[in-house]
Length: 134
Length: 290
Image (cartoon, rainbow over all chains, first blue to last red; front, side):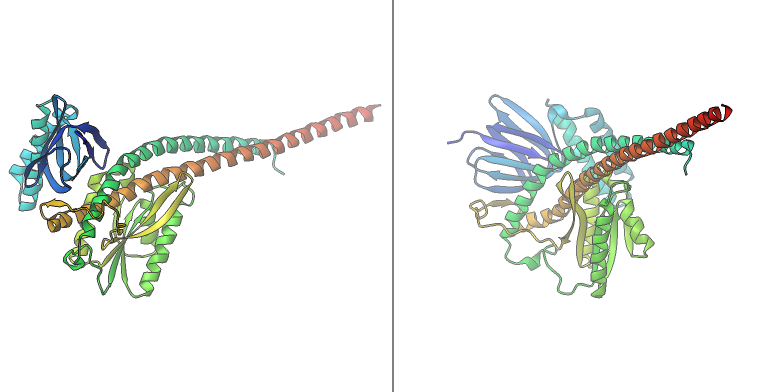
């Protein structure tokens, strides 16, 4: 019996990660879910947030900018719009993005602009939160 | 007959041209490498995404409940997205695409359909605007660095037009990447979405848990599928453009070399003829003095 699962994270720009891991916890749209080996087939939408996984004793964090996850008994594939491991996050850029988003949020004139700014803010916040865990 | 100096000048000119084509060839080669890498990095995502979509679409019994999957019974307006390069000097690359698009558009117009065009890349846009086609939108510079944002904003727009009935079908003409030396102009129908039917493999029939529901997931995924497809076409077009330019410039460079060779031969012949003539004069003069 397999005691590890293959975690693959891909984005349109690159393959972020492909590794054998012990457990994955992903930010599902209807709440966080954890995946251990031999999970039943499962397909979920992901929201902007934190995905973490454990290999041996170490836990690592990945910022996911929304997407989908497909779970099969022996592997998890994450299709993310964008994703970065905690150590890869550009903190300066994320901070700038947060400020920009806050400004836009304050200046938003209609619901659409507000929603766009809010989404941008969420992404920046997620990046910053996860960057702290490196 | 051309004088020595004329020939000389021509040789220099051709040599200069060949320097330029050589440089363009090398630039194209460098860009090609970058574009190819991008395409390869994108591939795993696209493959996976298509797989997921297929799996979801396979479980759909009632196509009618998904606006993006349903084929309209009456088609009045269609949109053609034509992808070409912004610049020329890449052989028949742009021309092949334009020809294909024009044939298709004329055929559709002959059927009495209204056709509007989204032109990506300057060349295609110029061509159709000059001929008074309805170019709804022009986008340039997209292929320099194909990215998800561009693809999704165009995708969203097309999906919206499709959903609110402004168009009934959307087609894309793009250069499908076959190999380094071959790009095949290809026409695909991206809206309504026609998911390729999956063979009844063991993965296909697996029971899935969905979160949120199957319907919501599919509704959410379908527009994204359009974006991903567009992005894939962008990547292929970028690679195709550079590959075509590289080949064209390589041809041009070797043609230049040949031309220089034959011109040099003419030059040497003319020079030799001049020398012989002068010698004859001298010998003739000396002979006359005896």
